[in-house]
Image 1 (cartoon, rainbow, N blue to C red):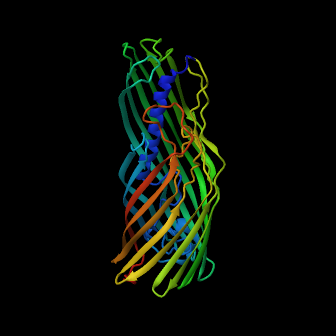
Image 2: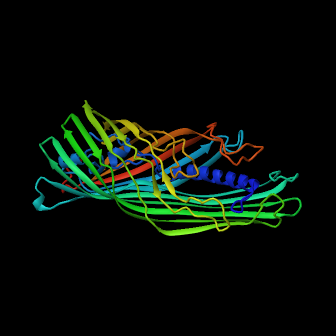
Length: 477
C-alpha cells in the first residue's frame, strides 16, 4: 500500500465517519435558516412574508426594492420598514441512515433577520425616489458533534477490534445585499426602477475527525484529519422592475442580471496523519502525513439571470396574488481553487477546493389577502425548489440542500398608530432521495450510488414584522 494513505480498514472507518458527518451537517443546517440552494426561502416585508413572496406584481411597500423596484415609484407614502422573523424551527430526518429502522434526526431553533429599508428624501429629487436597503439574501449555520464507539471485526486478523470515532464540523453561509434603489413613475399607474446591490458572500466549511482502533493483540492505531475551507467574495447584482398598479388590478415584471465579480479571498488548509504501534496488524501499513495551508487564495461566485412576473387582482374585498420566477443556473465553477498538493510521505495529489454545482429552477406562489374587522388576514402556498444537483459527489460539492420544498404560510396584520404589526406562521416540508450510509453488518468504503433512502425536512417559521409609516398623520387607521 502507498505510504500516503491508511489501510483499507482505516479508510472504511474514515469514510463512514466522513459520510455520516457530511449528512449530519447537511441536515442540521436546514433548521438554522435559509437553505444554501433555495431562492425563495426568505421573504421581505410584512405582506410578502405572509403571501409566500408572491408579490412581484402587487408589492405596495418598501420590500419592492427586492421584489419589483418599479413599484417603489408608485407608493410614495411607504415608509421605513424593518422585517424580522422571530424564530425558525426545523427538524431533519434521514430514514434508515444507520441501517434498517435506524433513522437519524437533527433539529435547531434560531432567530432570523431579513430586511432593513428606508427612503431617502431630498427636495431636488422631484418625482424620483431613492431607497436605501440592506437584506440578508441567504444564511446558513450549523455545528455538529458526533461519536461512534463499538466493537466489530473490521481488520483482516480474526477477532473483533475496539473502534472509536469522533467528528466535529461546522458550516457557515451568509450573503448580504446592500443597495440604493432608484425609481421613477412613467405615469400615474406605471413605474420603473433599478436596485443595484453590492453582495458580500461568506462561506466556511470546517471538519475534524479522529479514528482509533485497538486489536485483540494490543496494537493501537489512530488517524486524524482536519480540514478548513473558507472564502469571502464581493460582486455586483442589479434588479430591474416594471410595475403597473390600479385600484383593482396590478401587474409587474422583474429581472436580475448575472452578477459581476469584483474581488474575493480565501483560505484552504488540510492536515491528515496516521500511525500504528504495529505496522503488520493491517490497521495502518505505514505512517503517513499530509499537511498543507494556502492562506491567500482568490475566490469567485457566479449567479445567472433571474426573470419573474406576477399579478394582483381585487375581487370584492378579497385580493388574490400570484407570482412566478425562473432562476438560471450558472456554469459549474470552483468558488475557492486551491493548488493540489502532494502528501509529505508521498502519494497521489490531494484537492482541497470548494466546488459549486447548480441547476436552473422555476418557482411559483399564490396568496390571498382578506380584510376582517380591523385586521388583514393572509394565506399562501409557494414552491421553493432546490438548485442543488443531486448526482454530484457529496465529498466535493459544497451545496448541501438538494430537496424541493412546498411552503405554506398564514397570519394577520394589525394597524397600531403609525405602525403595521404583522404576526404569522409558516411551514415548509420536502424530501429527496439519498444513499444509505452503511449497512448494519458492514462499513463500506464507497458510497453506493443507489438512492435507497430519503432525507426529510420539516420546518416551522414564526414571524414578526413591523412597518413604520412615513406619513405625519394617521390616515388609514
